[in-house]
Amino acid sequence: MGEGIARVLADLAKTGESRYLNRLREQMKQPALEDESSLDFEDYVGDIHSHTKWSDGRATMLEMAQGAQALGYRYLGITDHSPRITVVHGLDAERLVAQSREMAEVQKQVDGVTLLQGIEVDILEDGALDLPDAVLEILDVVIASPHVKLRQEPAAMTARMMRAVSHPHVDVIGHPTGRRPGSREGATYDFEAVFKEAAKNHVALEIDTDPARMDLSPEMARMARDLGCDFVVDADAHAPAEFGYVPMGLWMARRAGIPKERILNFRSLDEITMAFE
Image (cartoon, rainbow, N blue to C red; front, top):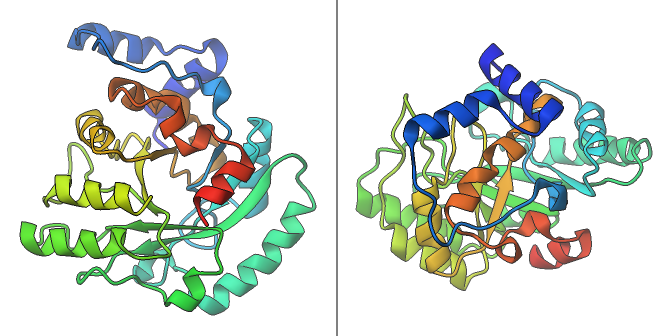
């Protein structure tokens, strides 16, 4: 996390506001939209997308769990990477079993927050997933994300994403375009067709509030809202301090006009568990 983002988070933690974000809003002079939603971070129940030192996170599972506990979260998804991206030391079936043993021990040390074992599984070039069904079906939450080959031709990328949102074990599509504003454009595909299929299959779309991603954008999220999609709003945190991305980034969901009942993170543990069955 850079110093600038750290200062923004410190302002938010101390005062509930950010001088920097307020200044940006004033400079952009974006008029309020009539159907912007009202979302209160105090009603946010838990984050389902986080990483630990099991892959590319910078904190242990216990440290991440304690960070979620300090925020009053009722649940936290531990969703480290799958093996495809070798540089992040992703988890195969054997390492997931080992991680589950550690999770059982960590769970004993944190009261009030339930740890959900999941995976951020790579969507391969043909739309297949990076782990077999026998592994995915036993996890609490499966986030399927595009990370590589984002410049595929739109038709091929559409087929790839359609296959992913149709997979019976996928619960969420993580950062659905893969964009990194200022450094990398996101993938181009038939968003309407993919979002419609996601809504039909009850696959939620993520609004990743990491400032390096902000994906889905408010404009894309608004389209998905109109097509019937549900959402998750997550920090994609790699360290406890990055949980602060959510209160900083909820503006995207508000701007998209997404009502609270369409965002799974505002639901109870029982409700979100049922949504991921």
